[in-house]
Each structure stands twice: as structure tokens, then as C-alpha cells.
Amino acid sequence: MSDQDRIHALVAEGKITEEEAQRLLAALREADDFEATDDLEAEVDTEVDAGIDTRLDSEVGSRLDARFPSTGAFQPPSAEAARAVPQPTVPPSPPEPVAPPRAGYASPGPVGGGRGFAEVLEGATFPVEPPEDAPSDLRWVHISLLAGDLEIRVDETLAEPQVENDRGNLRLSREGEHYRVFALKRKKPKLERGGVDGLLDGISDFVSGIVGRVGDVSLRVPKGFGVVLESKSGDVEVHGLPFLKAQLLAGDLDLHGVGGCDLTMSAGDVDAALLLTSGVHRIKLSAGDVDVRLLEGSSVQVTGSLSMGDLDARPPFEAARSGMGASLSGTVGGGAAQLEILVSAGDVDVRYG
Image (cartoon, rainbow, N blue to C red; front, side):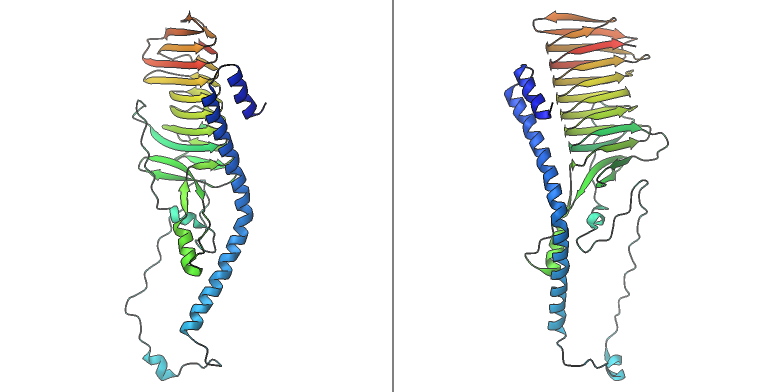
């Protein structure tokens, strides 16, 4: 079943409204359009780059001809004329130091020829704010996806986060103690003014944007890092992360041994194995199923509300039926942490151990 068919089925089953369905369909169309645009850009890039090179050659040649008109065969200057040429009084500036590439990443190519504009962004900063109600002792990685599957793992051998994808267009920017994952996207250089001016316009228009249609993404973080995630479409799998704050429009979310979460989802399924010992945690889902297993060692008080669907709560949790929905309550250990589960339409299963 395609994503579109699944959304229409949710409407037919009464699990989401028509308005919610249109939002989801619009997001899917946006993702498809983004992918089609990337394919078209790949074909156009070669022509644009060739056009830049041709126009630059013509422009530079014309300017040189205008400034140094041809007077026939070339004659070297006399020794007296050469001595009369004023010498520069300002020494040339030393070359800028080149920072070593970050671990796990290839160095960006040189600027020029319509390629390698990645260097333009090396000095850019991207403010990253730690999420509220999250552990204060964590450092953070912020990543935004338009469409694509994502896997997040903790790797204690790392000194800093690393990100990979099959298109190779992702970069990691550090802001203080935190990081942001972003995609490099080059706009076509403007040629309206021609030649060098057009190339400069093109470079000035080069921007970094939200990570778009980037295919499958793998994010590995050192111990002590949390992740802030925004995604419109795609499945997410997380292993061993101390805290995940996520907003997902459509897609499934699998959490394995995660120590904390603040999840807001429109449509999809959540399968979460959590070890909660402190703090406030939340799972909010408009349409889909939620399966939560609290791992041994958890200390948490759980409350929940389901508007429409079935709720299966096993001891020490209890479910109380109310109309088409149900409520949930129960405590594990000393109840040091708090977990709230809110589902509009779907099935909920909560257990311990």
C-alpha cells in the first residue's frame, strides 16, 4: 500500500480528518517535487557550468582586449620602460589558513567553475537552542528532514557527531557546544549581468537550507548527545540515545533503549523501548498505534489518554474505558520520571519489563 493509499484509508476509517489528510498528501507531493527537481538540476548543472565557463572566457577576453588593444606583433618592453613601472608598496596578503577537515568528512572543493561552493559556508553559524524540559547536561544535534529515512545511533568511540547519506550533500556545523546538520544546495549562478558579475551573483545566492530529499541518512553521536529532529516524511530508528525531541508529520518511529523523549507526530506508528529514570516525557500522536515497553530499571509515573481505539495496559498499569477511548495510569519503581501518552486515534499497548 502506498503512502497516499494509507492516508486515504485512515480517512475512511475515521482515524484522521479530511483536513489532516490533505496536509499529509501535500507533504508527500512536496517531497516528490523536491526529488524531481534534484533530478532535473543534475541534467542542467553541466549545461550551466559550461555556459559560465564560455561567458567568463568571452567576458575576460573582451575586457583584456579593451584595456590592452592589439598593436600588431608583440614587442617586449625596453629595459628603461621596465624600470619605469612602479612597484607595489603593499606586500601581498598571506594565504588564509585552511582548517583541517572534520573527522569523517571530505574537504570541500575550491570555489570556481560553478563547483565547490561549499567553502562559502565554512564560516557560517547556525544557532542551536537546547529544547525545554530536556536534560541540561546534554549537548545537542539538530536535524531537519523533508523526506527520507533516518537512523540514529550512539557511538562512544566518537569525539564529535558524524552524518552520512547516499547523496553526500550533508554537512555538520558546530555552534558553541551544539551541532546542526544541513544540506548544501547550490542555486544556479545568475548570468543576467554576464561574466564575472554574473558569477559573483551566483556565489552570493548560494545558501544552505533545510535538509531536503537526501535519501537514507545515518547519524552517529558520541555519548552525552541528544537529538532534535523535524521530519515531514520518512521512518526513523533510534538506538541508545539519552533524549530525543521529535516532530514528525508522517512516518514510523522505532526507539531502542532510549532514555527520554518528547514526541509529536501526525500519522505513523511508535514502537518505543524506554529507560526512564527522571524528567518529563511525552508521546503525542494524532493517528497511529503506540507500543511502549518500559525497560527494567525505569522509575516513572505513566498517564495516558486515547480518544478512539483500543488500549492494552498490563500490570502495574491500568486502563479505564471511556466511550470510544480509554485512559491509562500506573507507576513503575519510585515514579521519579513522568510519561504522558496522548493518542487521538489508534491502538495503545503499554507494559513493563
